[in-house]
Amino acid sequence: MDYAFGAPPAHRELLDFAVRLISRAGQVSVKGFFGDWHSRRKEDGSEVTEVDEAVEELIGAELGRRVPEDGVFGEEGGATSGTSGRRWVVDPINGTTSFTRRWPLFSNDLAQVQTGQQSSRSFAGRAA
Image 1 (cartoon, helix red, strand yellow):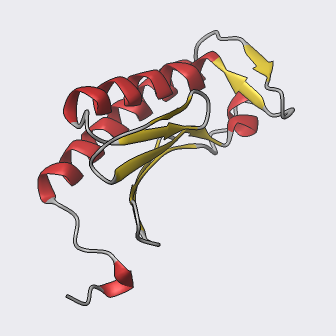
Image 2 (cartoon, rainbow, N blue to C red):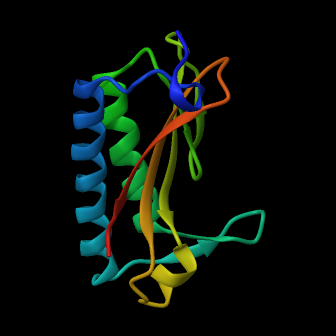
Image 3 (cartoon, rainbow, N blue to C red):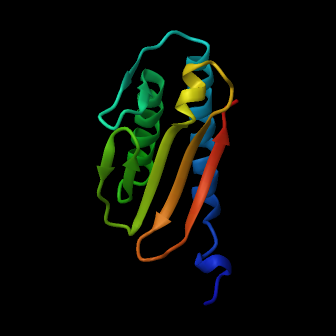
């Protein structure tokens, strides 16, 4: 079957789950944005906050419960392998520099990639 952009259509139930999950991640981010947190420099010199880590933990844990057969690659925590041929890619706070400066220019990003295909589905929630 020939799909637009080389990707089959998203499964409605999985899409709804991803949208709810990224919405929860946004709520954690907004609460953290106005809260107290610490940050540190990673080995590559980029900054990571406790909120980045909390958001990625939330997303990874929920994906593990809902789709345990899927792989997950998180910007902060690394990768877990899966058996389904699907992998979720997580950028818990895209725009950490803006976040640390209290500029509301960041998002929580979640994408699903099908192994063996050059296409992906992105589910991103704008937190601010």
